[in-house]
Image 1 (tube, one colour):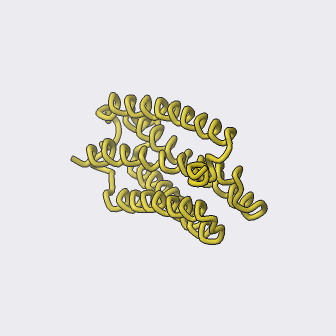
Image 2: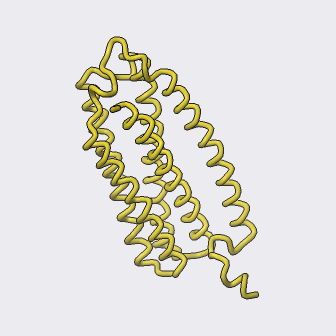
Length: 198
């Protein structure tokens, strides 16, 4: 009985366990998607004929700001999850809103970064590098934007229904999604930006 009471709320029902398992399987498919995009980028990154190369356009300061915002949002999402498990709805929502603001800041800086690249002469049509670059980063940015919308809808549900087994499961799943996007960004930062600037 003691082990049951120590079970996190999001795992408190069999349905919740199955939904969370299903989401882990979905994340496996997302790993395949991003692996394919990374492989395509690795093949095409040197094809810069007709446009600027990575080292000519990447601005490390902007990329570091994006990295700070997204990685910090992962930390605040973890704090929100901790508050959820403590059944502290107010603190949970505060940390969740901070997470959203950090995520929105990341998207804002990424859009500005893309505008900078277009002004420098790099678009999806410029060369194979541009096509692979914008596809990889655009897919990740779209995922972050969808995550922001998803979290906003969950905030509304938690405000209306409180922290229940169902809302806890949904929040745990969206936190997995958010952390996954941060891990993908670490790979982007390392294999796209740092490698491109070297």
